[in-house]
Amino acid sequence: MDQEDRIALFLDYENLALGARDHHGGRAFDFRPIADALAERGRVVVRRAYADWSYFDEDRRMLTRSHVELIEIPQRMGASRKNAADIKMAVDAVELAFERGYISTFVICTGDSDFTPLVHKLRELNKRVIGVGVEKSTSALLPPACDEFLYYDRLEGVDVLPVRGRRGRPAARSAEPPVGQVDREPVEPDRPPAAEEPARDADALAVLVAQTVAGLQGSSDGEVTASRLKRTLLRKDPTFSESDYGFRTFGELLRHLAGHNVVELAEGPAKGDPEVSLPEHGDQEVAFALLRTVVAELAAAGGPVALSGLKNQLRRARPEFSEKKLGYRSFLQFCKAAATADEVTLAWSAEADDYLLTPRQG
Image 1: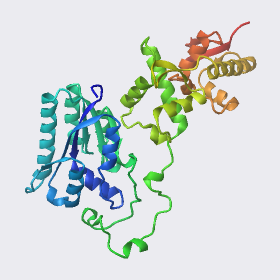
Image 2: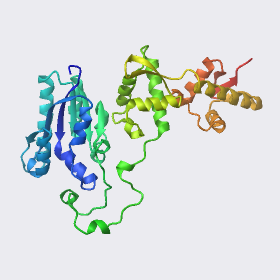
Image 3: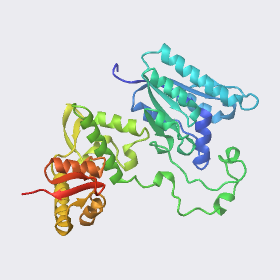
Image 4: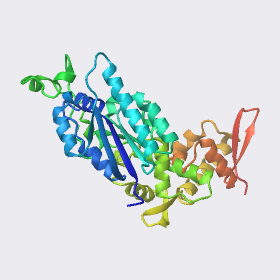
């Protein structure tokens, strides 16, 4: 247990509850999916939720059953009530960061960008910060500030209903729409529920992983393990989740990419944490051979081949070609690697204002 992360959970409850009801077809907010997601990440030792609980009577019972401490923010005039909740939650989080050194992770459940300075301060104090928010009510400023950001809508156990057109004041009527109106309202045929949206582009995933592995290999001499790769992907995009691509675990994702020769897996320093590398042979050799062949054909017809437009020529011969899947950040970097491997020659031409390639001799 000593190696488990200790987690402090803070919920800006009004933001979460109203966001869920407004964007999930009136369905009430459920705390259980968040609790389950955090149970996989460590031991939650503090659970606090902030709101004026006179507005959330049923929710209060649900949270109490989940052992969440309810912090009352009484109704005040104007907008001061919301500001008071934000300030109280931020002060409590920073105070806890100083007083409880054993707490390594803070989970801030809100979509409000006003909490971005709190996230920065906690990370400055060497705390890991995980954000949780309803996707359509989360500010674009908040996820990049966190170490990891979980969209409530995508958590296991959250059933998202399609949002239908509503008139008037949806916050007051979303939980129980008027009887008879639901069946008469037309359902938009081209907008499926968020839970049924297709998985993200697998090619984009392959490019992201290959580029990240290449960057890690180039920036240090140490081995690239699966855990290190996952942490780096989250630093690039705190909302990254393998489940968005249809995989249950990160290991399953890596095995899929290894099967498609995007990466290679080897036994790592710890069980269940394999070493990840880019293939030294296979696709790269095929890609170099393709470049050499195309350059030779074009050069035979008209002399040295300009870099501009060459990639399109390669794709005419092999439509699936992508230097990024091989870990190269640009086509020029790929061509430079081919020149280093003595597959082609590459030189800058001031006259052509471009790089020119010629086939290797001999």
